[in-house]
Length: 106
Image (cartoon, rainbow, N blue to C red; front, side, top):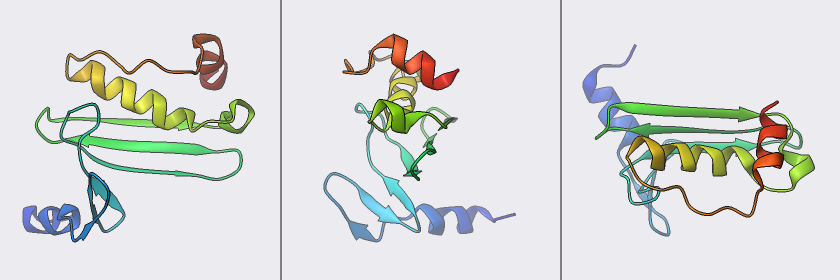
């Protein structure tokens, strides 16, 4: 759909953020020290995060529909943890218990 040049333009960071650059809806910055391009969002009952790992040639998408009952952006925590695992790093310690995370996934 997009040429290689189109992808470069889509993900080229134009605006500086705190620890990342922002490019057409995507953030370009590290997650757990891993170079990443990512986008997340949420509505009251639905949350999601997409992460592209260009150096790893991998990607992650996490969608949840129970995050609001937990009170945290569960999809983001899970996606960031998967990013760490894909890059052979240890996920950050989370305040979300495994019970709540699995309940959200169920």
